[in-house]
Length: 352
Image 1: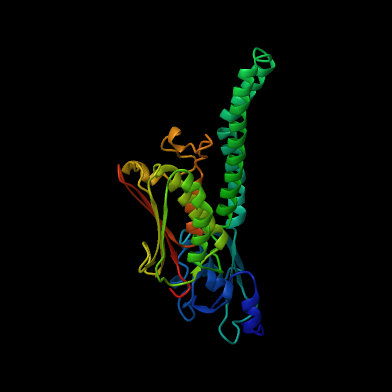
Image 2: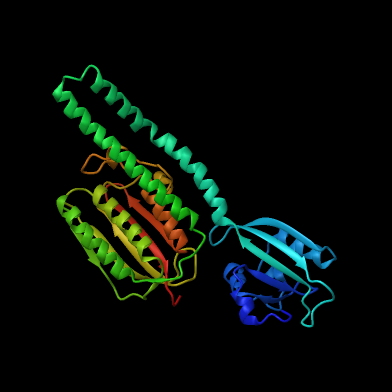
């Protein structure tokens, strides 16, 4: 690293990797370790970063080129878009053998913000067209044929209120989804106590469940704590899943909420905590389960109305999926027709 102290090198915000003439990693600062992983010092850069575009650029600089720049994608653990620059150090190799510096810049947030703006406009224009058309039709009717009809006016105003509320909910959910997706590539660094978060959600939703004659059965076990997570976002996940269970679980039936220790979370060898929410509703056809987390997907619009008559926006499970992805967790969905459905969220623990 020359004269740059190791502590100062680690404080640099951009991921930086220094390599020697044989492409071996000599130094990687803290930001680089967070991005591509540890354990690469003394080994070929390809052990930690296997993208051919980057490796080719490094080779070209080691063979005499002054600089190379480019972009590439890292698909795991979540998709990220990275810009890179490879520069040859001036003069002969440093005393420690340093020859070139690879600088990486995570451009995921900027790229996603761009995509989100386009998606938001497209989604809003598509999903708001129907309620807006309905509102305009009712307004014209109230100004014309129904201007003196008090019964029709009362009926139309009630429908207009529902449509306006639907639009407000849709916009809120779209904004929430956009915020989650933009930051999905940045894993939470804080801790969250799943038992406390889930307990608060159950307390808040018990009156809603009681109004439908549903009992929330909350079972908690001795589990590793805390998980690596954002308590506010996990609250949003559990609230969405439990509200869905109350809505679709069937009047007068119980909803089970369980916390359990999860060894070897699905798709990984890490230990963690699992939270399952089970309803006793009609169940979901097997072929539709993979589509549940798609934006605006609804199994049956009539079935997705709540007690107030509002139709689901079809964004709740998409928000859940992206929050769980940001937490490097896993969402599992199981269902049997006539028996009910179970949604299970797996989250890694700090000690995993």
